[in-house]
Length: 203
Length: 258
Image (cartoon, rainbow over all chains, first blue to last red; front, top):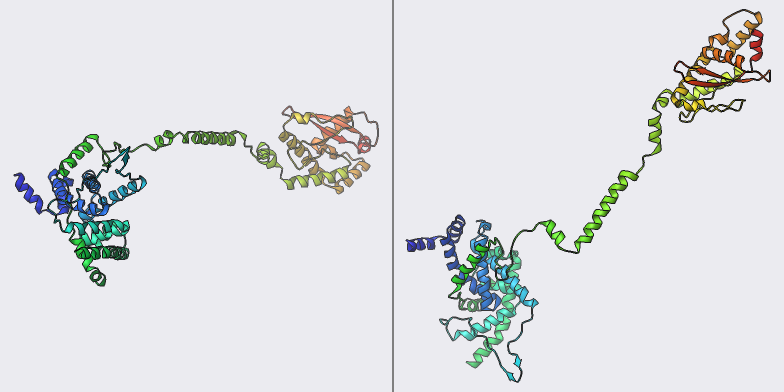
């Protein structure tokens, strides 16, 4: 019975799931969590550059969906609504980070100077090792471009949203969205040009 | 699109980025936090890690919670109370309105034009008859001024209300004006006296004046034949007394008549 119900829930659209959850079906919310946890984690990692932060923000986003389910109305797509929440929470996180200084863990402790390396949990084991270096540089280049270009480039070129959906998520006019995406791509290309030349030279 | 073609390689690389997945304990942690939120009764904010409680606060409590607002609120309340007291007790009404309200009766009876006409008539009568009547001022508020040779001031009038005084004066003078119309009548009177016909003396017709003249003759001892001044207290039906000052320039005529 639960399996059949699970299969039935998988057939439903996002909007049908949220309306079912609004009616009181907790299973519909679980299905929503299953569908969006990886999408949100991927977007937020590319946007924030930190895995722990992206997990926290992703959980905060889904908790907000749980608490504020009554606020969703079928005027816009559900994906638009959930990504809007995620971007707003991520902006708040970035703002808080900029206020506080980031202390380096490579601190000298008296005579013994120890270096503390944080374990890299950004990539799961099933990721191709050869592409790791390239991906690392692309991620670093993404983190280098301004915030207002970065989120739009990620939404368009990483998550493959349409321009209309990006306008709905961010609330920015169409012309501004297109111009900012192009400027972001231009900056990325300049940054990655040198990186690819170095990679080719090493190969 | 040209822009899309221009950055096609970049877009391919970005799409080829490996997808970052959520951790294995993501859902367990999530539902744990949801249970915590629902147990605490938070309705909107997911910031349970920081221990903040979401809730609406009364706007009054916001004002009085902050200590810097207390002196401002106190000062404002004192100013409001002061303004209320000032406008309630210390503002005075203009004097013109009260004077009219106090003497409405007089104003009704005496308009300025009426008073002026009466004045002119009295003046004419005075010049013709040689008698002085009590002056009638246009402003009803001021009491009528009158002097006597005896040096007494008209004090009894002050005891009466101004309205009654003015009414009596008007009555007497109206009666005088009706009876003694002008110089023609005076000539007729002289003629009558000469012919020694007993007519109803003009004085008799003047009701008010007759009584006054007779009583003055009785009470006053003239020092001068030409001019005498007497006083008469005349009682009204109401019991109030009035003093009318009469200068007797016509005493000769009366003596002859007598």
